[in-house]
Length: 288
Image (cartoon, rainbow, N blue to C red; front, side, top):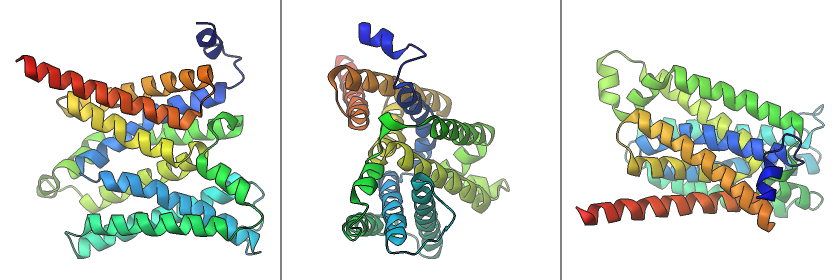
């Protein structure tokens, strides 16, 4: 109880880590629901890995003397640039290929995941001077988030959330029933591009701030869990964020109480919630 009171104290030393986790837990599931609706779970796994490769590549270029942004002094901003470029390139390449030749989406995503996973390791291995910094950034040091990045996260994720709420009906329609969207005159390509931009931003910035494991976990697991226990889009969205926020807080408390890494603890709590709700649903069916 003493640790819990310490955590909720406004002057808590690690408050930025707690707030960042709660922001991710609230907003990421709102993006994750579209991965579930589009049946593109594998893409939610692959894109954080793509972002990883972009971060490692940006640091490698910097180390060998190629400064694509010569006036950029911040390591975080340099890595973020690489993450954004790689993530958007992957998203739009997959989108273009899917429109030209349908039916091979999972194959392409699997190929990109394997390619960028190998590339991330090679880029880090070829960087003799910055391996520690790059690995630290790739893991996502949640406990070391400065005020500037917390406010940046709040601004970016807040804007994304407002966009998702404002255009929610259109995003759901083009994700769930493309044919109907075309029939009633919706510009499916435009809404797809806007959704891809949102996905790219939230993954790129999230990987830089809290790491790929946390982003992957909060994108997919709350949405998968909520889909299993809700009916209708609105309850689906609300329960997804509730699960994300609750898991983030519990995970942070457990990691602080028992001195565990915050990111993996958060994801483990999400998995426990998923299993518990699944078992509860299974038992409910057996009683009927």
